[in-house]
Length: 340
Image 1 (cartoon, rainbow, N blue to C red):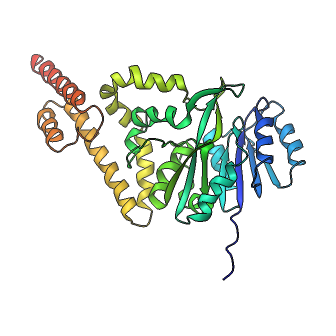
Image 2 (cartoon, rainbow, N blue to C red):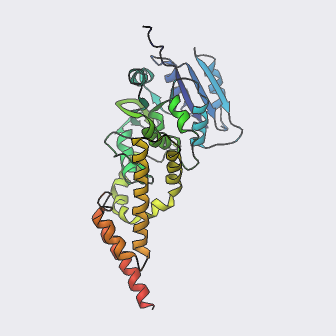
Image 3 (cartoon, rainbow, N blue to C red):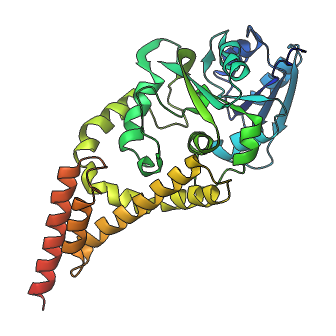
């Protein structure tokens, strides 16, 4: 029996005015213990010498480099979607322009795909570093967790959030066969969150608990996640989360709609069924919460229903949410009665 051919590797990189940190990351890519077969770089209308740096580097490395200059600015999410779609290898790594990779990142993460055909996405962890590359003594997964638990798209996480989970694109590798099933990227999503949510429904995700990326935090990061924002979210933001959860759900409802529409087009499985069931449950719960707070006739029966059916208990801050909705509903009822 002949040995299986090794998986081919692409790196999808996006650049935008990245001259300050780009050379260090390019050097990391060229020094990998398992070299990529190709690097696809989409530049999003840089006005500095980013493209000149890329062109010079492309001539110095032993693998294929494709540099695409966008005619108009796409933004980082759609630019990544474009770069990934232009890759031709079996496994595609996502690379920011300002991070620092360990020399064995491609080798270690690709070995997971080699050994486990059912795995569609692999995430490593990242060490947070400052603009000079000095350690901030925080892991990417640690600073991401508060945002995943209390943040904007919390109502999309149809699988329980476990310690070490995150969806930083710079720590991600995806099979091309999986990307082809989840593309195109909806405008409502970032590329990494879309990969994280959809890949779980059609494949397995592995978290490699090794810091194979140094996640550089500086004043020009596109990501809003930082140790400071993470600490703030676990502090003052958490204190009022029960008040804002319903509003956040409706404000970002387009994300839930896009995810639900995608799920409806997939082959029926226990995973897609579980995700659809979860989304419907979230929709029902937050619609009921909204009515509790604003509908004089439905407020009390819906409030009772969400208590006895476990709607509140399956979500964060159940006691505070129950009390807040009752207070809001009672105030609304009293106000309307006094105006009658």
